[in-house]
Every structure is written in structure tokens, then in C-alpha cells.
Length: 101
Image (cartoon, rainbow, N blue to C red; front, side, top):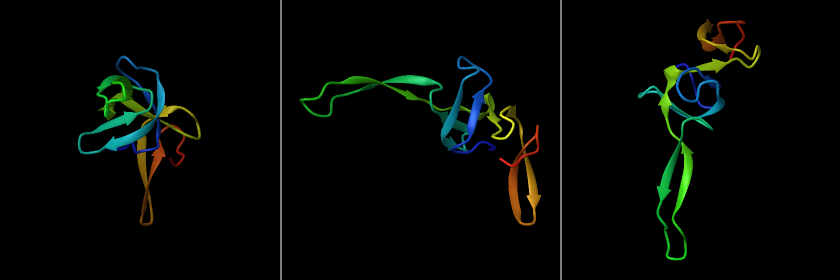
């Protein structure tokens, strides 16, 4: 999977198309990610004690990594991710400007 935790992305498909956000969690085996402010779901939470009230909490849910593109830090454009090997170090590069991500 080419998107990692902490990357800035833009959503390319679905109801949240065009939204930008930061990856909070990545699940490589399922090819899914959780992004802040994207794919918001409402969760009903029960009261834990007698003096508390139950509430509805909005939280981001995971969705497919194929619905996003990585935003390059240097050029600021949505891009595909490539790899470059220099010695024993493998790094991700921007396909548009060639900068290391």
C-alpha cells in the first residue's frame, strides 16, 4: 500500500470527493484507511455511569485506499506514487515533480 499514516491525501471518488485530510490510521491488509474529516459516521454511545447521559458521537470510518490520491508536499498536487532505490534505501517519489515524499 502506497499511502501511510500521516500522509496528506485528497479523496477522488464518492460522496466526499474533493475533501483533503490527513491519514489517521492505515490498514494495509484490508487496503483501507481512516482520514480525519472524511467519511464521518455517527456512533450511539451508552452512558457508562448513572450520572452520565448517552450521546451521539461523530467519528471517521475507514474506506478504501483506491479512492484517494496522495498530495505531494513540494508541488501541492494530487499524484501517483512511485519508488526509487538509492543504495539500500527505498523511498517514495512524486510521479509529477519527482520529489521524495
